[in-house]
Image (cartoon, rainbow, N blue to C red; front, side, top):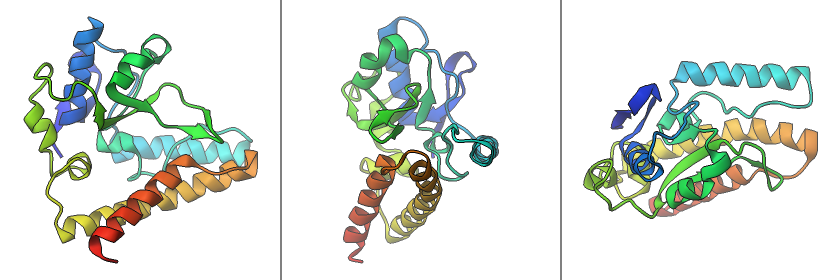
Length: 201
């Protein structure tokens, strides 16, 4: 995975996401406010342990996935307070809000980068667009056109299954508290089905 350190101490992202953020900064005329970008396994574990302690202690818990399964760990997510005034601009640059419970957006500050939705991905501003498309060693690269070997697909399936396990915990809590289903689990299951079809499984 190619990682890029963001300007002004805002953390790190994968190269395609960082290039998008640089283009977004240029369009905004200043650096986008970022509370958190890429996370290490240890940082994710802190969030996850806090989440588990909230589950044990009361009906509301901040959403946090198990370490190894957060999009933050793959360098494709940011938390920003600038969503209040700049959601449309974020969407235009491929950043979308993804944390819903029963169809209700519960984390408006959390955005995940989707290269295919980035209307400015072919611009040279903020990074080399060829590099952004050819990050084939990363999860992003594998999803947007990097080489997919059988070993890579097997690793991806393991990764997705790990994410599904973590989401099952989150879904169980959600159903217990408010009922319904989790859109992220549905999305991941669709990804697993697509990959299984490619493998002929």
